[in-house]
Length: 328
Image 1 (cartoon, rainbow, N blue to C red):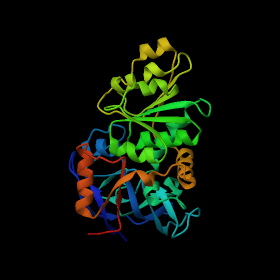
Image 2: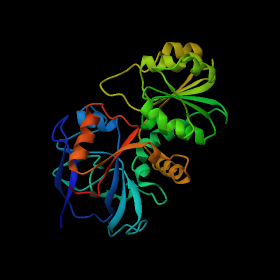
Image 3: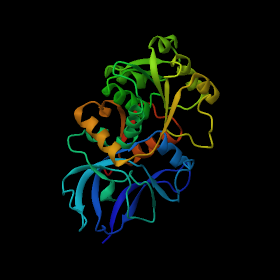
């Protein structure tokens, strides 16, 4: 028996709509989840909807999104690790008929393979719906090898940079977030993170912060110039965190890094261990991303409007989610 549900559907690049689609019957190793929130990625969602995300096999029409949180409604015959009514977070949806899941999280109800499902009890659903993006920031912060009390510069005030800043602080580092949007920096400052608007403030503050490492989520020569002079010779680190589409090959000056004998890390993707650790930091209160969600779309018109802003690069807050409870 198939089910009809609402989902975000992109029929071709730069086009987005909310449509009714059908779901295949639940498989034996799958979990049917009614979505509470799906988290919006201003980077990956934008590139997928623009047709520029080349890490994967995009087939149109597609359903975007790779992070959602919801309530289990049904279990496949072989599923024993979860229970009906449990709140869980998940990545990839399966069983979307006539629509390619890339990865299919922006949907009001869908199945996921049990291996892609994680307990999210005790986590604010707005935060849990951003757990994959947050895990990228967690991964970046985990690469810093300094001691508690050392300074870490984070460049880029989006969801990945904000998550990296909060995760680095949870490890005991002093953190300075360098961004360009007061509306994004303000809620981080309220959470106790030192912030600097690079458009209006002096970059002398970066050098005086005495950083041992920089987490770069922007990946440009301009962002590189923000922190490179402040990093110590031979012991400094740069963590490049995120993704750049379109054949971009220059994120920094490799010759300058070699002369200074810096260490570079490149992080991407997600792993079960990192996703679990990220959810635990949300549960403990160290990663309160619900405080950074500045936009929640409810209903078809608002969802389409939000994702159109994402396509056009016009989303202002740090983070946004789609709430799927309102069918209007």
